[in-house]
Image (cartoon, rainbow, N blue to C red; front, side, top):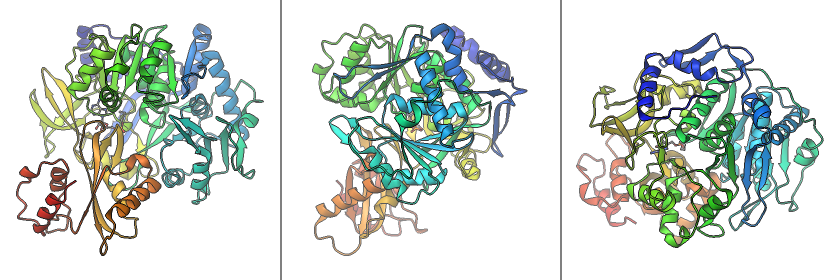
Length: 632
Ligand code: WT7
C-alpha cells in the first residue's frame, strides 16, 4: 500500500527526494500495485515534440488494482455507497466483491455486443451506480470510455460521439434529479439522429422504468444484456501507455478537445494523490459531490478511492433538493468522514442561510476538500466554521482535466493552510511561474503564469485524433514546459495562490466553458451578426457569462430576441453555457487589425468602467461609450 506522508517535515523531505530522484520516487509508488509485467523504464519524456511515457512496457489492468486486489482483505467492505435523489429511498451499496462481480458481468456483456480493446464507448448517464460499474467494465476489457456530462445537449453529445467514433452509447432511460424528471434516452436518440454512424448499440439502463421509444435495431436493455452474464471476466492485459479514457473539455479556441489519459501513470497518480491529500484511513466514508461526467468524478469518485480500497459515496441528486440541508443531512446519515465539494456549492448554500446547517451532527467529519475554482476567503471560513466545527483541515485542491489528478494542494491536516491558497505542490510535481516572455520567476512574492516543468504520471498524453493541437495548446506557449492556462502567485514561503484563467476560458459554477464555444453557439441564431463572450465576477457562480451581441436590422422585441439566443445556446451546448447577461450592441471594440479588444469588454462586464485604459487606438473608439451606457 501507498506510503502516506504524516507530517509537514516529512512532506518537505519526500518532496525534495521526488525532485532529486523522480524515477526512484515514482518507481517506489508504482511498486505498490499489481503489474502483470514490470516496466523497463520509469519515464521517457520530451515536451518539445510532446511524447511522454510512464512505466514503459509495463503491463497491467487498472481494474485488477481497483477490484481483484481488494477481494482477499476487503471483499465484504462497502466499495460504493449510493445515495439516491429521493432522500427517503434506501441507500444502495456494493461491497468490493459485489462490485467485482457487477463489473465482470457488464464487461462480458460489452464483449458479447462486439466491444473490443481500443473501441470507444460513450456514456450519457446520470449518477447511478451502473455508471461507475460500466466505466470499470470498459477498463476491464480495454475499451476506452468517454463520459459526457448528462447536462450537455444532444448536439454537444453528437459532436463528442463523432469526434472519437464511439461504437456504443450507454445511457439511462430517465433520471430524477432534484424535482426534475429528465428524459435521458431521448437526448441520446436525438444525438444519434444527428448522424452518429459509428454507434452500433445503445445500451439502456432502466433507472426509473418509465415508458420510452425503443428502437430494437440498435437499442438494448441493460438487464437483458448484463444480468445473465458470468461474474468472471479476465482482465485484458494493457500496456501502461494504452488509452484508458477520453474526457472532453473546453479550451480557448475551437470545439472541445478529447483529453486522453493512459492506464499506468493515471493509476499510480490518482491512488497516490487520493491517499496523501485526503489522508483516508480504513473505515472512513469518503464523499466527493462531483459528477462522474467531469474529471473530478473520474479520479476522485471512481479510480482514486477504489484503488485505495476506500468506501466512496455516489450521490444522484443536487445540493438543494428537497432543500438546502441535503448535503448536511446526508453527511449525518452516512457518517461521512471526508467531504469534497466545489466553492460554488459552498457559496450557494451559504447564501441560503445558516438555518440549514444548524442542528446537524457533523462529528463524523475529519477532512474537508474544495475543488474546481478559487475559493474566496469568506466561503473558506464559512466552510470551516459551519461544517468543520471551526477546526477541520480544508484541502483546496488545484488541478485540471489535463493533469488527471490533484497537483497543488495541502495534504489534509499535514500542510499549514491559509484561506484561498492551494499551498504546495504534490511530491513529484514541479511548478514554476513565468512572465509573458517565458522567463521563469524565481523566489517568493512573484506573480505569473503557472507552468509545470517536469512530467507527472497522470499528465495529458494527447488530444484524441489531433496530437498537434495538444502540443500547440499546452506545450508551445512556453517551450519545454506544460502551460496550465492559469495565473498564480507565490508568496508566504513558497505557497501558491491560484488567481484564475489567463486565457479565454471561464469557470462558471466550477464548469469550464470556452468563450469561443458560446460565441459559436450564439452566432447560430439567424439574426446574430457577431458576438463576444467574456466572464465577469459572480457572487455564487464564481464567474458569470456576459455576451455582447450584434444583431441584423432592428430588434423590435429585445426580450424575445434574448430568449431565442438563450434557447440556441441551450440547444447547441446545454443549459450550463447560457449567458447570465446579454447586451445587444451595434458594434464591438476592435483593434486596427480587427481583433476584438476583450480587455474592454471584461471591464465593462465587471462594472469597472472607470478604468478602461487607453481606447484611442481602437478602430472604432466611439463604440465604447455605447457599450458603457448599455451595460447590464
Ligand atoms: C480549471 C480546470 C480540477 C477538477 C475540476 C475542474 C480551475 C480548479 C482550482 C482551485 C483555483 C481552480 C483552474 C483550472 N481550478 N481547481 N482549487 N483553485 N482554481 O477541472 O474543468 O479541467 O478546470 O479549474 O482555473 O485551470 P477543469
